[in-house]
Image (cartoon, helix red, strand yellow):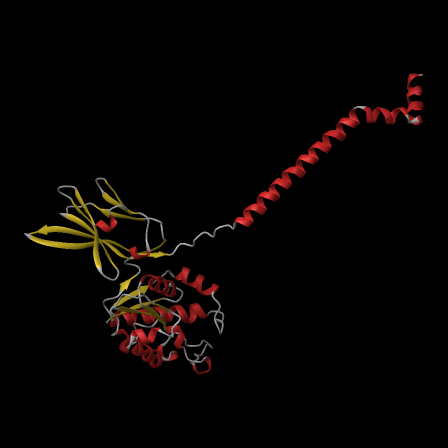
Length: 343
């Protein structure tokens, strides 16, 4: 039984939970443990001189309880998953994944040591402040809390993290794309003085999508992608389009360049992107009874419109012809007015 722990840290409202759920939908036998579930009661969280609660510190968290839950997963992932609602199970695989997400997971030494992969999400100040203001917290953020506490503590904690850990993949280094089943992924890899280009994907195992030999201009495709890959090449770049995306296409896509320097074959990583493929929402079939009722209503509506037009034409015809003449003949006032005009 293999165990794999992924850490997803980052700024508040930076997309940690969204990314974790997307990964969970991809990885079989996966669970999520969120650091936000281990905050201490508000009554015991320290308050500074301005009245700001010091939530953005490790002292505001029950890290011992969080570590205990992670240890329970380590001891028996399969048993741990049974009562958990936030777990995705899949039969036929012996690999188990734990996704740990939180804003200070890399600042706590004992926890940081457990991660096999570390990812850190960052967003600009303005975006973060806007997202934070649209969220409802209990207790609510007081006026000035973001600028007076949240953002300064994020910068301080990030600096400490960077001093402690050196193998974190930052969202500033790698982009991420969320697609739905059936959509397409487009990647552009630059053409330079290389021997070849290998487009590889990792999640969790590494495998090649295609290999392009610059000298012979020959493309070798992985049979699993043969019917779904389109390639266009010009002087500057190679554009690769992967069509009809499936859930299992999710992963880290990298352009790996091969070159020869002093008779040594070297490989260099180029453009990279995280792809997350979510299930598309199936269109609900319309019941036959609903279609029949709709057609019947349409026929009745057309019949009613036709009757309105027919009656209107009849009324107009009567008013222009006999109906109007008869009313004038039998009206003595009209006859009197007519005789006076003649005189």
